[in-house]
Image (cartoon, rainbow, N blue to C red; front, side, top):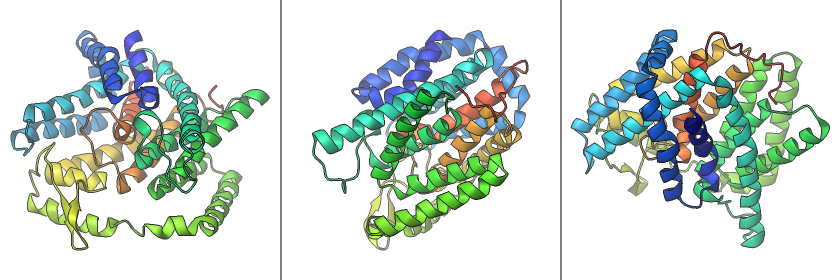
Length: 385
């Protein structure tokens, strides 16, 4: 489990700090895929125990992965075996974190705390390198270091950092000051990426955490959020409105039309397709929505399983909402669900930024299920150090 722990941390932080995607992927093979496969064989009884604890969620997950694997029989991809391997990798990733949580649950949540610090430092490095060293104007969309260089997807990753950081605030004065600086860097990264989807996801995530706390903080926090949004709009309206709706309504309608052309089987995982709209005949390489993408690739059975999987995940997190771990998972799910409405329509590629808002939330849900009953969930009123 030590190697899996290292692979988990590498997955979380290597996305920014790895010098190349090749190094990031190769390290994951050594630290996560191979140890995960071995652990699945050695501790398969633990996986059965996880399934017994929540048959609904695990059944949705297994059925969805199975349907995706079966779709390689009719996929239009050039190498169906490669697409099957990618589905298998997703299963190994999810099972590995479930097994880690079943034996060392504290490593899952402490790993998020470590990742908060490491990724926030990556935000600081990105801002320095892009705007100071490379002398880019502040109006330019920030491109981060490593594999978070995409302004949109990188911003979603750092949105999760802000949400996780809200649950890991230390108690000491100097520690709190350092934590505040790191969170400001992460927040600045999200804003400088100029992704409106990431900003909506951030607002949704913070609002969800406030609602879970309840009481007066909901009204105070809600008022602050509204004021900040209003001031931000007044100051940066030209940037916010410059790109309009980015063809999203037209893409959504065209995606539904594509899905209805193959309503049951879909095109199969890995099939290249173009979403062509009347006002953009060149087309887009995906649907810009996680759910319509699943509908296009896996048809109606796939999208129903995908919806059921996310609803079940929210139900599990809601049941644990009075614990620090439950709120971490709930906030992560809210951000990811918002992200899936605008971007992140790549489910089966090798581990990359999209995995943080597609598979990591579901893996954390599994980790919540897999925790031994003897391990008490930390009350949400006690901050995790």
